[in-house]
Amino acid sequence: MKAAREVDQPAFISLLDEDRVQSTTDGPLAGIAFAVKDNIDVAGVPTTGGCPARDTPATANAFAVQRLLDRGAVPIGKTNLDQFATGLVGTRSPYGACHSVFSPAHVSGGSSSGSAVAVALGVVPFALGTDTAGSGRVPAAFNGLIGVKPTRGLVSTRGLLPACPSLDCITTLTRTVAEARPVLDALVAFDEVDPWSRPAPALLPPGVARRMRVIAAPDGPLDLDPEHEAAWLDALTHAARVAHVVRVDVAPFLAAARLLYEAAFVAERLAAFGHLLDGPGVDPTVRGIVRGADRYSGADAFAGLHELARLRRLAERAFTGADALLLPVTPGHPTLAEVAADPVGVNTRLGTFTNMANLLDLCAVAVPAGSRADGLPFGVQLLAPAFADGPLLDLAARWTGETVAPPSARTLLAVAGAHLSGQPANGDLVRLGGVLHSRARTGPGHRMYTVDGPFPRPGLLHTGDGPADGIELEVWDLPEAAIGALLPTIAPPLHLGPLTLDDGSTVLGFVADTACADPARDITAYGGWRAYMSS
Image 1 (spheres, rainbow, N blue to C red):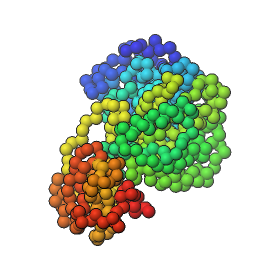
Image 2: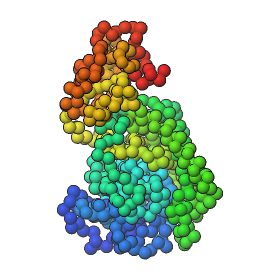
Image 3: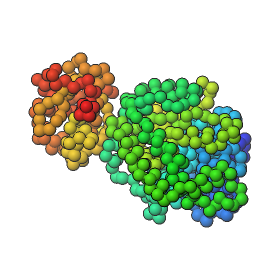
Image 4: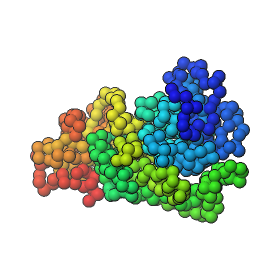
C-alpha cells in the first residue's frame, strides 16, 4: 500500500497516529485500510469540514465509521473536500485543490475529492465520501472509480457534519463493484437515533426487479462537451450489450436537478451550517452560495416542494418499463483554470445530471465507461428507485464485466398483459407471494393479439414472423405452489406454456391458442401491451 505521506497532492487533511492504525477485530473487513472524508467523525480527530478553524476533536465515531471498525476495517486518515461539502469541483478547500489522477490540469471532482484521489492512487482500497448533489459520483467519474450512492437513509448519517440533512448520503468509493459490496453490507443498518435513517425493506419494493435487464436512456441529445459526447455514444453502445435499452424523456429529472440550487432547497444548507459562515477560513464562494438562500421565503420553500412533487410523479414514468436510468455523470471535465475563472458557473453545470438523485429518492452507482479521446476517464451513472440498491449493484457489476452470482432457482412466470405491474391482474401475483424478477422481451418470432375474456388482455403466439427485437414482458418470481393456485384464474383462450425470452432462456408464460392468430386483432406493432393500451 502506498503510504499516505507519499501522495503528491493534498488528498489528506490529517493522518491517524501509527498506534491507532491497527485492526483488533476478526471481521469480514479485517485489516482493510480506508480513508474518511473530513466531514465524518472519527473519534479523537477534528472534523474540519474543510475549515481549519474547526479544530476540536470528535468525541465519538460516526455511526458509519463504527460499523466499519466493528468489522475490522482500519481508518488511516481524514481526506480533503470542498468546504462544508458544498461543491462538485474539489477546489474549494483551504488545504489545497485536488486534481484528477489522470491529469494535473483537470479537477478531481468534489466534494469527496480527497477520498477519490486516495483510492485512485492505491493508498486505500476504499474510502468514505458523501453525496448530497453528486459529491461522490462526480469524483468517481473523474478518477475512474465506482461511486455508490445508496438510497437516502439506508446508511445512517449520525456523526456527519450536515450539508442538507434531508438529502445527505454517506457513500463509498472503490475501484471495483466487488470491493464496494462488503463495505455497503457493513454500512447498511437502521439507526433509531438518526431521524433520517430508514430500515431496508424485507422485500424489494413493487416494480423493482431482482435482475435488472432493461435500461432507460435519454430520448434526445444532451448538452455535453464534444469529448464527452463521443464517449457517451460509446457508452450507449455498451449499454445495449449489457441490457435492453429503451428511450425515455429525462426532462423531469433535469428540471428537478435545477431545483437544488435555483430554488429554496439551498436554504437547508443555511439552516445546517449557516452559523459557521462568519468564522475564519471560510471559502468565499461557499459563503456566497449559502448566504444566497437569504432571498427565499417560507412560501418559496413550499412552492419548491410542490414543484418537486410534480416532477417526481413525471420522473416515475421512466421506471414503468425500465429498471434503471443511464445518464452521464457530468456534461464535461473542466480544468482547474476554468473553475478559477468561473467558480460558480462551472460547478453548477457539473451538477446537471446528479443534483436530482436525492431529491427524487433514487439510489445510484457511478461506473467507468471508457476514456475520452484525450485520455481522461469518462463515467456514467445508473439510477434506480429507492431500495433497489442490491439489484443496481448487480447491474453495475455486469456493466464493468464483473461476475454476478446467479439468483437462487425459483419458479419463474412470464407475463405480458393484464398481470404486468400496474395492470388489473397484477394483484393476483402479489397476493400469491410473487415478486418482480426482471423486465424482459420475448425472443424473436412472437406476435401479440387481443383476445376475448373477462377484461382486456393480450395473447402471445410464436408465429415465426414476429419482430426480431421481441415484445415487452415481465418475469415474475413465484412460490411453486402459486402456479397451481393461478391456473383456475386463467380463462381460455390463454394457457400456460413455454416461452422463449430474448436472452435465449425458456420460462413458463401466458400464451394463446393458435386459433387467436387473427390479423384483425394483431397488435404486435405496438411492441407491448402497455403501449397498446396507452394508444
